[in-house]
Image 1 (spheres, helix red, strand yellow):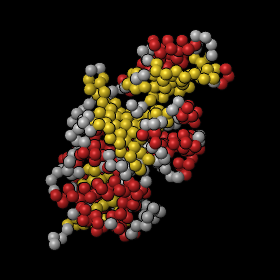
Image 2: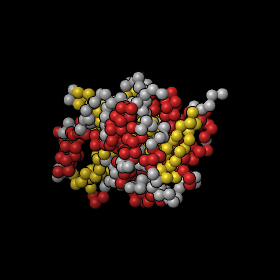
Image 3: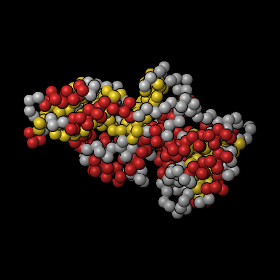
Image 4: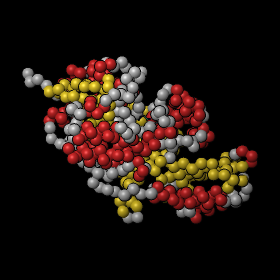
Length: 432
Ligand code: HSE
């Protein structure tokens, strides 16, 4: 029997994902060696604090605070520290010293992805990052490999588990945003800096990564239009429920035509989804991503979007694949950002909207409101009027697909009109 080669694996970070990765590498060693075609020797685990409590117990002798020494001489470097620095420097060192890299660092890839991928291309190494988007759900490899022969038109879905948990609690249990957020915090669902989740940064980083792959174009965080769930109230959720919708924080990446040119739009915002749409049944901290491709049609990827063990599954898959490449030799499969499609401004997107207003309940008011929509070139699809507070009429107007710019101009005119007391909310409707 030919003896297997041993590959040195360096792990940077032993948080909730890192500690599970270390545990699996140590306890599944034989099985992983069979799959990878090489012994995967966990050479060390770089941590900031040797004495920090861990989710699983790790051999003390593997822990080190000297990441640089651990990286140099390793065949595979797994980066699960998160953040930009020192993760960026460590990954560049790993690549220049000949290692293949596995990372779950969405913030780094969404801001410095081009630099990392260029460094990998220069030395022919591979950078794998299945864990960076939607944790356990295989979505990077399908986009990069399985669908490489197809033309992706649109990706949309729920890529942030903690905000989905909060919105789901509000929808199903009638909780306020504060109550739902408190439960999510107590369960440890939110990032250490909760604004990353609540203000949509986490979802925007993932959207940038997905769009780069889907459209073969360099898309970074600043190309993503981002709105979080900070302004979503229990009242909005209840209004959506009455109208047959559920509110979800969505990431949308799509091709569109902008002034005759092919362009892309990448955006994250809370939007209405019809209650019978599959995304409406994505509950708790789960994620789901729809990919629409020209030949394959619509594909749905669903599962756990967070969690130490679940995310470790994605990391280990990348480690096995990096080990196989390392053994086989040859250059790593690089990214393909060669299309350089421009990003269209948010005003150019076409979608449906639901506008909630409060207006005086008098003859001619509805006609005035309808006239403002008509002047703005926004076609009304549905009108629902009910008795609001203090003798005011509560009016919910659903539109046909309209340009965002036309809709926002219309909303500004509504807000300025004497017929309208207050524009209560404006939400996009996605999922067609
Ligand atoms: N904060 C992320 C989420 C964790 O809530 O989805 C997984 O990336």
